[in-house]
Length: 249
Picture 1 (cartoon, rainbow, N blue to C red):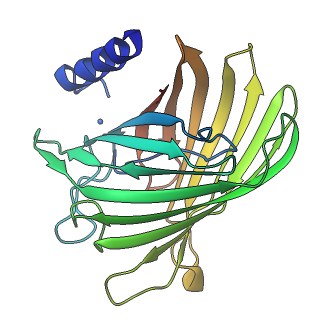
Picture 2 (cartoon, one colour):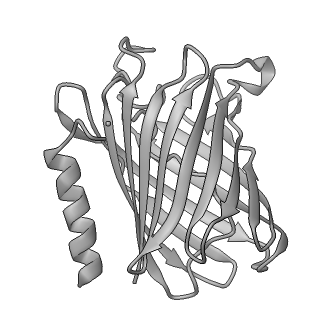
């Protein structure tokens, strides 16, 4: 019951205090080896706010990222020791305070091993149907390899992500790698640097966006928490505050 009260209180605070938090991406996360155990349900709530971003739409129908707020619950389930899956329901609030439900996304993740230390690998596939308010094409596919290495004090992870538009005329994959370097502070707390890049289509790679986050991962009363503040390093990047709440059941 405490978990529900804590999550509800945080979400209520975000709704009544929109200027505290506001994002153009529904999920800002580097995937690691973490996965639900077989038969385990969980909920992750992604909360992102862009304090400084684009004020003009990049394409017709887009909600500019400046001062927009993203709230995305993900309901996930562990199928086996190596496979879990989830469904996302992305929502967005624009700078004028209007809320929209953007559609839905399905994902399936495979993790090859679950070692306490050493190298691990996996892959995540995601298919989404969303509105043109947040994506130029409605149907999209993402393939996200997961490569990581852990010691008792350090955790290094990279996701070389490829995104493909299923609808529309162009199906050339886009390349947007991400990586995370984390250092253990206590038994339940890690400090990290996360970096997210966008290089555009693989046939004409270019620097379209670079954002680096200073983040902390911790646990409060059994609820996982990731909190980060990110700064853009190019004209096309945003300054964003992100939070992820992970609630196991």
